[in-house]
Length: 485
Image: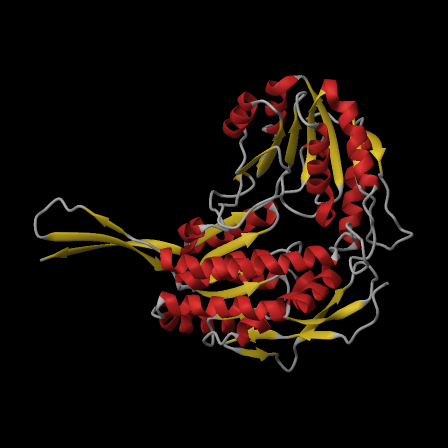
């Protein structure tokens, strides 16, 4: 069944524990990319409202910082239970706003629940250190301290799970939050915030600002009262935020783009490799930072692997993410579809061949693009170097492990690398040689687990990590306490 028309949603701003709007507030529209129907409208925050939100968070900080960690954890435990009650509703809105299949959206809310539970538990593990003193009658300890207001800036491809990584880590550490989600998923953010409001978090502890990155994002990046920026998005925007935030010496955590590869050696299990490649490349319509966009394959098995990947891709049902059985939805908007078209055209101009797809599916709607596999790609081609953020997969032939790893490391990115091999020797070497924050042996590039540090090297990030207890390296700072007795 296709999507039916529903009551339009409206999202205002959430500041100091209340849903607010100004008399002259402007609003922007959220459009369903599958149907082009209006999902609802959201408030566009003004510069003065950004100041209000930061002020509210700054005022709430002293109280939240001095709230016991077990009490903070109790809020997150309650949040997890409340998300269970609204899982289906939130998933439906996410799918309507950005297009991913409903099963993926439901799974994403499950990640939010797991993150709330995990971070609640980590509250009991915010350990300090006891250091042996160099003098008699002295004790030395080092303790973690929160920093203050954290600005969380999140993208549209995972509207709530990426927010949960940042927001829950900030809160359990004792910081307060101003959250700016991507405009494409502002209504999903509204439901997320409604859950946190229902959990009874103290006023001002978390605030929601929807609207323009030019107004909200830049204001947060330069605001003197914001102490941390936690951003997930494009490398280009991450660089801009780093530059803007440097003037106030903010701590900034950047989780950025990727040009992730699956390396397939000649001894690999090709059936398992093909399955991992297709799932990594085309789920979320390729719109994820860890999506596989390159297959670096030994020349001797390339043709056989290519046939298997094509066959599995052709089985994937494309359509409205709310329809049963759909595994590939639309791209987030028409602009993204045009961007994918441009990259495919560039690949053809540089000598690539279309093995599958290569065209927009205008018969389904304005934002659909067929899963595309491009053969005869060389490592210096644009399609092998730049992040497409769409359902496009490039096949690159190599002769053996050494060339494969050289090609893998030959981009400016370093987020996720996968290798398929039966050789313990090459698997172990790849784990060491891959210049990537994530390395998968005999698995796809997109399969992270809770509690495992997530982030990239080179231009895929600036060295910080999320999802695990290493998030507290961003969200806290060390204080050394000397006591003479």
